[in-house]
Length: 401
View (cartoon, rainbow, N blue to C red):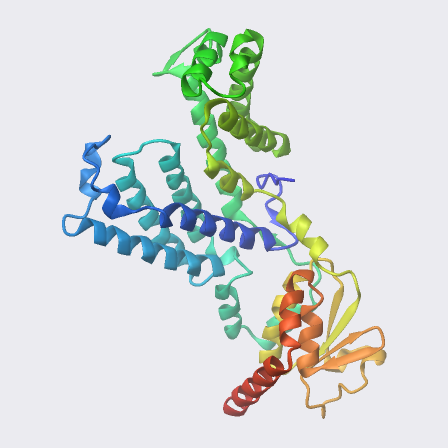
């Protein structure tokens, strides 16, 4: 269910990196879009006035509001993979600044989670070239040779590195380890009795935070309280050990998610950010394979057409089940040679069973190979949509002939 990228840093699909960008982007847009900075700055109380330097001296409410929307725009660019090196670093800087301002009034985990997002963004910026399912990658293919483009289509042994998720996992595990360490070594001094995990301490926390909670009766059972406290320490301290030992992290992450849910029930505290952070390490590529049809398909392309090869690369990358075979026209098997000779007006032909698709129909057939793109195919089958797309294609090809 979850991937320990320290032991499995290379995957046969780039899906996980693309989904992780989406998770980070959605999470940070959700977190920062709801901040009403003009109202927030009216609060007379400051928990950490030493961070007052982070508040703009002129029109702070307007400045921070504009900064928030600039951040959201940059996050959209980051999610689609446009100039990731710039958008990731710029987003990290803005999130760090807005998080610092937020810390002046609220220093809880809700605010501290923003800085975990900063670490993740920096890692994506450092390893931006590993993001294959991105606008940046397809922009780079403009400069690749015809031979390199052809190799991308014909290769069936591609492997994709996930360094941003690998080191992001280490960072998150270190943060959890630090939380557990602080519970055991309070102010740097070892507490032999593990004061946090004592039944008395946890019962006090439960009855103080949510005295009218539905499970407050659990505080009357010292053994359950003790088990819960020790379990918390095992999860927080053991997560890093499991990651470094290159063992399965699935039991630990499921335990942390259960612990997070129990905080909501027992204490009325809900660390929603934990779900987004841990979902970064889910094995999205395993589930994704179920969204690709298992029907066999062959694509014959013009080996001299850079544009058509670049257009086919996304289909080759997304074909994680290896159900699509790509053939340059001169090397196409005999059963696919029909209508694909050099005199053909179509640069790409798609074959499935005994049927052949060319032009607009070929694009629709390729898209329908992926179940999650079927709604787009339905839309493309509308007569007026097809008419517009065909006219646009003719205009583009005429001007760039």
